[in-house]
Length: 271
Ligand SMILES: C[S@@+](CC[C@H](N)C(=O)[O-])C[C@H]1O[C@@H](n2cnc3c(N)ncnc32)[C@H](O)[C@@H]1O
Image (cartoon, rainbow, N blue to C red; front, side):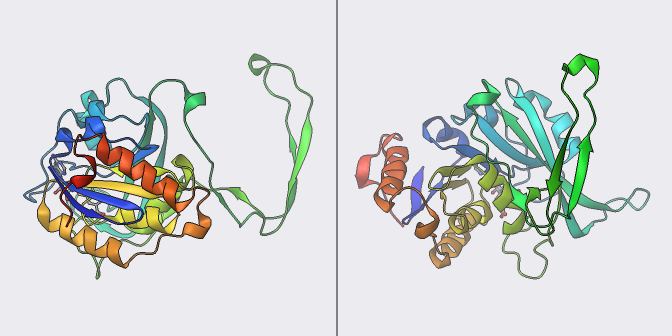
């Protein structure tokens, strides 16, 4: 296991994630593991990783087929919700089926839901209307009817189907996720100045999205080629300290704690 790259807000480990996950603390995990659905050399399902995680909040990309096949990986986790990433142009593996233009990100949690950090994401595209709430059905208890109003261009909860163009034309990884689909998941599940962990970081899209959102990030990949690409992207990125509620030194503290907990102290190998 090697600390491959480190800056103000990011740590990258070159390792099999199963060797380090038991030591890496973060507010939430946002990751895109191998689905085991292509002939790419690294696309081999990894067992045990979800069980080894320390955080109790996990966004995991996958296909319905993967989640059904790999259901045992998520034993001990509760499903909270799922989001659909709608791509502009999908894969066409089967000519006898619908053209597949989406992937799923499933949100799992462990322990009490109330203890899980969550900050629902809103978009500024409400349309003005006044809606009269109907009385709830008897099994949800008695409440009087009420109304709520929304304003043109005001906030509304982000919808669970999120359209973001895929990375065709500029991808540095064969299954690179666009920053635009990762950022709302990070903002929902990690406070400003908090830490997000990606055990299968590939080209480091989660780390870049975290930087843009004023969060710190820890990434792991077993393939050194992708550590190099992720480090290059992070070195170009801008960490929005102004948007962070933690001071810079606190973020250093968080990352130092993550590193020290691996048993390497501050004398680890840098890039
Ligand atoms: C689906 S890709 C992630 C792509 C990434 N979301 C991006 O935007 O570039 C999965 C990654 O997991 C890595 N991987 C596979 N097995 C691993 C393991 N045991 N530990 C750490 N990384 C692993 C692969 O090298 C690959 O880069």
